[in-house]
Amino acid sequence: MWKKMANEGVDLTVFITMAIIFIVITLLLGWYGHKNTQDNDSYLLGRKKTNSVIIALSYGATFLSASAVIGFGGQAAVHGTTLMWLCFLNMSVGLIVAFIVFGRPTRRLGKKLGALTFADLLGKIYKSRGIRLFTALLIIIMMPIYCAAVLKGGVNSLAVITGLDYNVMLLILSVIVAVYVVYGGVIAVMYNDAFQAVIMFVGMVVIFIVTMYSVGLDGFQQLTDLKVSGALEQTGVLPGANGWTMFAELGSDEWLTVVTTFLLGVGIGALTQPQLVVRFMSAKDEKTLNRSMIIGSIFIFVIVGAAYTCGTLCNLYFYNEYGVNAVTYVTNGVDFIIPTFIVEVFRNITFGDVFVSLFLVSLICASISTISGLMHTIGVARGYDLYESYKERKHKEELKKSSLWYSRVFTVIMMILVVIYCYLMPSDIIAKATSVFMGITAAALLPTYIYGLYAKNPIKKAAHISIVTGTLTYLFWALFINAGTSIFLPICNLITGQKVLFIGSSVSFVDALVVALPVSILAMVISVLYYRAKSTTETEPVAEAQA
Amino acid sequence: MSFLGIPDPWIWMSYVGCVACVVFCAIWSFKKKDVEEDGE
Picture (tube, each protein chain N blue to C red):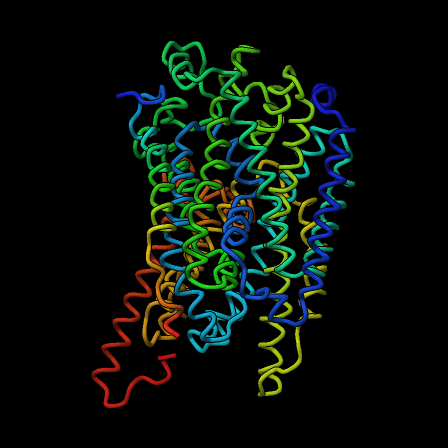
């Protein structure tokens, strides 16, 4: 029924024609990357002269995936415009703080130390093979889950809307990404990101205009009135929700879930994304980073702002058309609300089928721009960071041989693993998987990263303690306390027989990051103070503790 | 106080905040004196 209904809004000829043009351009940019990739350095960081437009669009497109548009757009349909605070955090923390506080010193230190990846950078700052290995392992273990969630979300929507086979779509997208990442390296990834960002931008602008045209410029007022009069109820939310245009009751289950999981979990987690840190290191100079901020801010505002605004207002559209809210109308799950809305809203307008196809291509762009950045990062974490660390340890000498071949081979292997994950993962998981990946990287690495960037003589042992404390706290809270994340690995259920330790308690709605990050920061501060005090009271400095 | 049809200031302030971020980025991008190249 759904498939039949959705297909009525999609002209497959138009979509396939647009998709073929898109694939050809993507592969051409992959070839361009390949021509300009001579060695390991250029495969990992490009030619280190990337301009501001490419940096901004690549950063934005990698940062914002199908997760932002479909996953969190769908969550906005459920929880309302509170999600716009995530847009604000994406811009203020994910862009402004990331570029000014982290980007500039990252580029400077990366250049000074000759670092080529995020793991490499942390390892060289602290002169610690352990930190480099841990960061690489965290990427290899956790990033494929996030990657699979993005891929699955994009392909699921495409398959349902077009009626094309899920397996075929998954295979095609995976092969396209693998080909241009493996052969073109980061140059192909970044140029494709920029190209895909332009398509995403146009697509979201069109969607926003058509949505406002459909529901009216006073859409929020209408939605508020409907909720207040009791004509339209907000369903699928936790106790404490006050409607789509009102903040949830402070401290309620709804408030804790939205604020700690969606807003803070993703908003702060963006700072330690290895695939984004590489963008800073590939910039030509600091002027380039500064210039790229304006383009990045407009891009993020339009893509995320439009997704969350349209996500909320689609409730009004579904009410006007069918008398129900989005969650009630779209029974497939939250991740299908935005795709369903797009097909429906464009059905009755001129060139609607062209716009639906444009949205579908935008969806492909949003998915593969993120996946390509992630796959490149995963591949080099294994092929460069782990391989080089192993060779250095074994031969006790600086590695001369290029690990380029290994990075390429492992990118392919990990791509296959990601596809397997897609079949194993449950549905409706895009937003939560994004939150988990960003949360654990922030809890484990954020204090170590910022301390390493700004401390003159960063203390290695303090970083070790912070990383271990942050990681263990996050894992314990995510697997045993938080009801939303314990489903990923039901260890608590196996040990105790219940889903989480405190069922029904408010703490089961608190995201792990909100607890693990302060603990990790505290561990770092106490360790630094302890080792500094120790080094001043002893006659000899604590050489082993200092990097 | 309602703005854009949104009655809760805690919600509509997020839109204001986003616009402020764009303005800040514009000022930073075009007005800020670029620091010396890496202190090199």
